[in-house]
Image 1 (cartoon, rainbow, N blue to C red):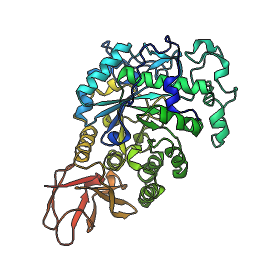
Image 2 (tube, rainbow, N blue to C red):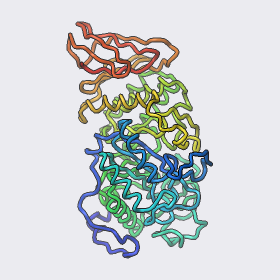
Image 3 (cartoon, rainbow, N blue to C red):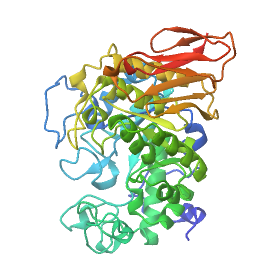
Image 4 (cartoon, rainbow, N blue to C red):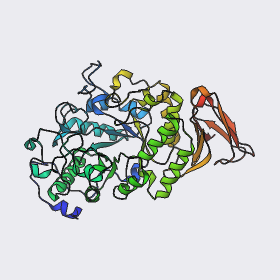
Amino acid sequence: MITATFVLFVVFSITAHPEFVEINGLGHSGEEWKSRIIYQIITDRFDRTDGRNATCDLRNYCGGTFKGIQNRLDYIKNLGMNAIWISPVVANIPNSYHGYAATDLYSINSHFGSAQELKNLVKACHEKDIWVMVDVVANHVGNTNEDFSKINPFNKEEYYHKKCIVTDFTNQTELEQCRLYNLPDLDTENPWVRNQLAEWTRWLITTFDLDGLRVDTVRHVHKDFWRFYVEAVPTYLMGEVFDERIDYLKGYAEVMPGQLHYPLYYTLIDVFARRNSMYALRSTLDNMKSSGMDVALLGSFVSNHDNKRFLNMDGDWNILKSAYAVILLGESIPIVYYGDEQGYAGGDDPNNREPMWGSGWNEAHHLFSFIKKCASARAKIKVNDQLIERYVDDSFFGWSRGCVFCGVTNKGSWAGDVSRRITSHPFSEGDQLFDLISGARIAVGPDGFICTLKSGCPVILVKI
């Protein structure tokens, strides 16, 4: 295997990366990222700066920019977020508003703004203690009808796997060797390709002062490449392994410890949107802990750009709040998908990628308020506080982390109040508890306390 030390001394064309500066550390470590709550943004959909807030074709550019995000940082901060994850920033083939079809790794997508405007965004974020995570792709580039001369720096056919299309997503060889949606598949076994990807990533982080990266299509690239890449790019990397199997995710987490928590996502859909037993949540949490993975390095989420929004599957506000309570007060790094706090309910791509300006960035929305309160509760928890199950049955799950207790149900808003007596808890007899969500006060007696979820809304208790 080619080592990171070798990479640092490989000489590349000065025109490919004119601003590259060799440094020992990049961004922030996984341990540092454990203290963050990430707000995921599709750059093109968050805010425009031309004064126009009209509807748009969701399959094309809608006009969102780096400057638009910068103008809304107070909104993000007020929501309780202290990190953002934005779309891939590099130049793409026409109409690729999402950023996953690159043509030039060393040019910034002009639809989003200039390189200087990206730097300005990052600087403004850092002034507000908001970290910036950028999406990157090592698996593929944009489809230029086999004219690879249009791709920088991978401008020759020899830098790609032979053309075939992934048709069987259970076939690992196809996943790693063939094209996803006919996007040319980079030959990441080729040492030159590997080195270029690592060098470009270091240039990207260094040039724009990024804090971490979200890594696309991890399961579509052989693990040997990721071993090399993780060593060559010493920053927090949050990979995407789009699979619910814990053992399968573990295989990649052993190489890249930061991953999206798809096993938990599928469980949240199962127990909340489909109203199946809460024991499935217990099972997933227990199995993740016994797997040996560092769960605190995983990114947990309720909705994202690749899956229909939660409210599209279940339109109950309090069910959505329950799912968000699990990730915001759980052990993993929470990810809030833009628009969920405004009640967006789009279906499959591209309908789950709605323009944010339709919401008016309403900070009075009850979902905005709920997520903000959860973020406030999380701030009371130490990074290393373990999640401790306190109560579980088919329709109720209660847990504590440090000094915070949370109770959720999958019964929904129309089931009336849901009450359970909690005898296992982190409090002492005589303590007075305050529910951050409803404002109710509860006294802890010799046999614990009654936890009542009004109309199925989560309870978050702290000691007064």
